[in-house]
Amino acid sequence: MKDEYDFSQGKRGAVASTKGKTRITIMLDDAVIDAARTVAENEGFGYQTVINNTLRHALLDAEKHDQDDPLQFSKGITAADLKSLEKRLSAAAVEIRRVLEPDAKP
Image (cartoon, rainbow, N blue to C red; front, side, top):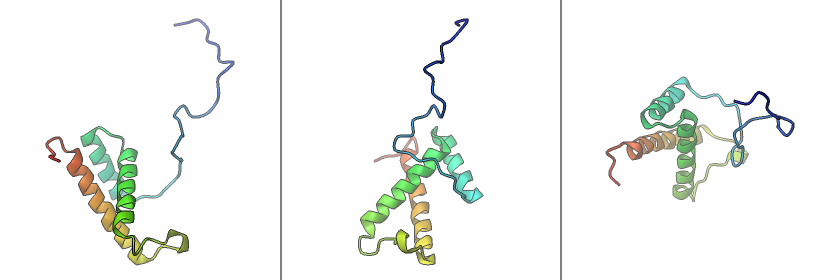
């Protein structure tokens, strides 16, 4: 270890790259976070990665299957939209668990 280090070219801020990601604050149900943490611990990923992948999968799947009836986020979300999204997220979580299982067969 050096006696002195030169930080004259150093920059303040987060060390992690923010390319393609945005830091947000979001309120999630405790059960959702607990489930994500459980999946993350079993699979060796971070729980935020599990949540991100679940959301991505659900939204991309929604685009594929609901071309006739897309969610209208810009006009507001209805109770039916939320229930539909909840079902898709649940199905996506099940699929992620299935795919990430060590004995999973394609």
